[in-house]
Image (tube, rainbow, N blue to C red; front, side, top):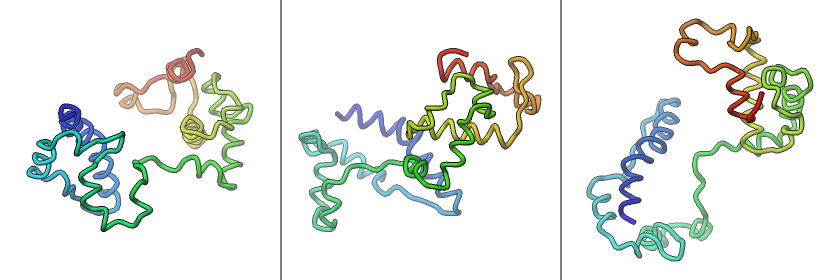
Length: 177
C-alpha cells in the first residue's frame, strides 16, 4: 500500500494533478497551496497502517472519520469528482447541436481530412465525440490544406518540431486511412 502511495507522491501528483491545478490557478492569476502535502503530514500518513487508509474499498478512512463532524452529510459518501470538463453536459446544450451537425456533416473539413470519422460518431456523446468536435472546429477555423501527406499552412518550424501528418492521425485514431 505504501509503495503505491509513494509512487503517487513521486509521479502522479507532480506530473499530473498538481500541474493541472497550477495551470488552472495561474490562468486566473491565483496561487494555490497543497496543505495535505506538508512533509510532516505526508510522513505521518505513510507511517499509518493500511487499514486506516483503505477499508472495504473506501479510501482516506482516518481522514474522513476525523473530519466527519465538520462536513455536511451529503459529502460523507460522495465520490471523487476529478478534473474532467463537463463535456457530456456541453454536448447536450441546444447551441451545440448546430456545431456538432456542421463538424460531422458529409463533406466537412474533419471528415475530408480524417476519412475514418463516421457521421454517427456525433451521437456517441462522450470524450471521443468532444475530441473530434474540437479537432473539427480547429480544422475549420484554420482552413488547413492538404498537400500529399503533409499539413500545409503550418510553419516549417512547427513541422520540424514533429507535427504529425493527418494521415498518421487517421491511422492512430481509427486504425486505417
